[in-house]
Image (cartoon, helix red, strand yellow):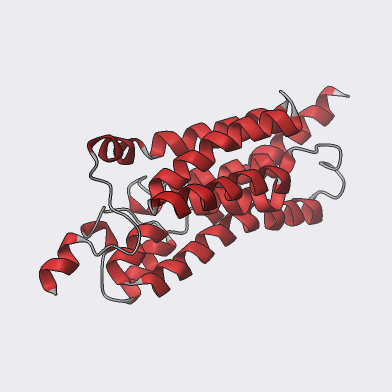
Length: 221
């Protein structure tokens, strides 16, 4: 491969990842909360993700944010890939892992939202969207794990952590120790790190279960 060709590929990958970062940075949990007259960062766990939105505003609104955050992941992969293909036809056709590069950009945009002081969510829904669009085999393993752990525990964070751990292992098993496999590991590690506060509450037995009213709601009841 010519050096100029390699430079162009790297440039378009970086530009696509930056575009996906902007797609992922839309803080839907915050936007939905504001539309309802609530800053979700000041209630519950303070997180802008679907779980906290569901506790603060209700399950329906939490489900909406879950869908919107997942669509950011899908859009970060498929939408950006389409855009790059339109702007530079064929330049990334031989790069099979371009989708995961764009997807990681979308997850980082969600986790480190520039519009909210570089603070965002934990990235589980957005990561799920990325995996569904770019690595559906790994998605099935991770999602299956999430369902099993959640059914047994009714604890969203525990299910998410379990899915993240399995994602890394499944990615290596299915795709091997290459770009795709290590990308699964990276997404899994990032998700676990973002749950470090939840891990502390789990160890202390203080992590709330799903469908359990938070303390603010109980006080107002």
